[in-house]
Length: 331
Ligand SMILES: C[S@@+](CC[C@H](N)C(=O)[O-])C[C@H]1O[C@@H](n2cnc3c(N)ncnc32)[C@H](O)[C@@H]1O
Image 1 (cartoon, rainbow, N blue to C red):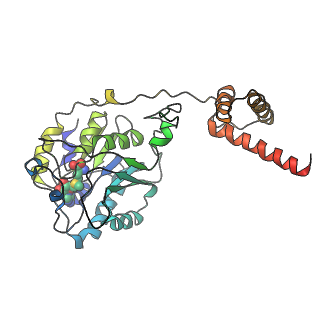
Image 2: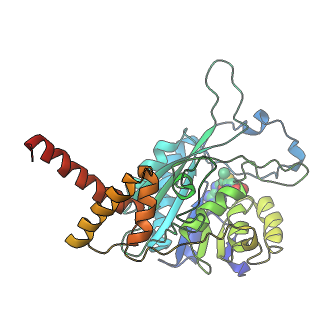
Image 3: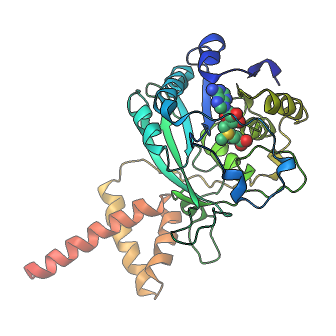
């Protein structure tokens, strides 16, 4: 680990001063909310003695400029192809989206994270989601490890693809309840951080957070054998957490992670020959004639032809279209 990568400084000036352009692979960050008279802690039923004093807020009137300034620094320090995830509530989302739109960063997904312990309300809906904005910097290879969590054959109990389900853009992940432990007011859950880090980085990559709070991003990144760094302006939060982060053993989380079996698809990406297409049509009819379902038939054909499910299904659809056209023409 490199403890010199953690700074008790303002992230905008700090980035300019200490962080080289293009040196960071992945940024996961959760900026201050910019909510006047923050009473967030009062809504949660928890003991304030364990919430670390020193969360620093940004005045509402400065939020737009502040947001653009830190996003511009994030853009600068990311390597070409590097990834940025910004966690935001809806109150100041517009400023974050505006800030991102003024950079070269490209939007990939707008994720919704649904959490538990939403703030209780009686006369309106209970707010229980955050936005996670997923952007990449153009000009380089983007890391997205599609099969890092679930293989192409992993199924849910109701026989759906786990891999597909895990990559849908609404995530229900509970906030962590940590009775009797010092924490930041809004600590990101370990499960959420693991997921982002698995998909968007590799071991040895530098994972950065401009607003460290309780250093949750850094702690998980180190536990997953990535390098970590970032900024936290609050002296009390920084001095407590910089000691805590030293206790993390690099790679200690890796054993907890699912290690999916990835079956290679030998002919993936290869152009279909006419003979192969004709043979696929014949085999499809033969197998269906035995009484097997369409789904099972496609599974068998995937193995037989060394192709993925979507590719096989697509070719079969073209056959069906030709057949129904022939029927209309009376062939
Ligand atoms: C929403 S919290 C981050 C929580 C963090 N993701 C976690 O899991 O604990 C935002 C943090 O940014 C810090 N902060 C506010 N202004 C800052 C600045 N200009 N530079 C660096 N940190 C700042 C706050 O003190 C607060 O700890």
